[in-house]
Image (cartoon, rainbow, N blue to C red; front, side, top):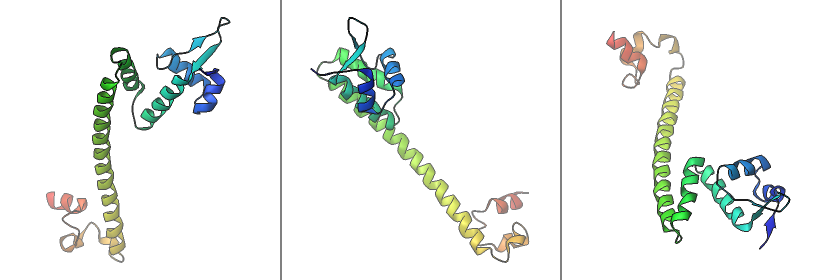
Length: 150
């Protein structure tokens, strides 16, 4: 079994030594110690770190990751972790789709404003104003709604 010093592990994973120490303190990875107290890590830790990096990139918090990792202690088959990951991936997907919908609505709104300003050439000084009643955008325009509400 190959063993890695903390600097080697940092180089292999792209994480800092400080991050690795923090992950150890938080119980996300386990270091072994030599008689002199020097840390070393097994190849299994590399797999855990790659999973942690992946989950963080997908928006998982360290608390969520920790709870998934700790399922290992209660489930040697890995099925509980698999089901928990499946559930959380679905939740993250749902959250991401909702954010995507809001971003698409925002983009649509920006595109509408761009079209409105491009079409208003020569009449922009009248907006809002006397042209509101005839404006092709009055159903969507916030100026028209505030003018007609008052």
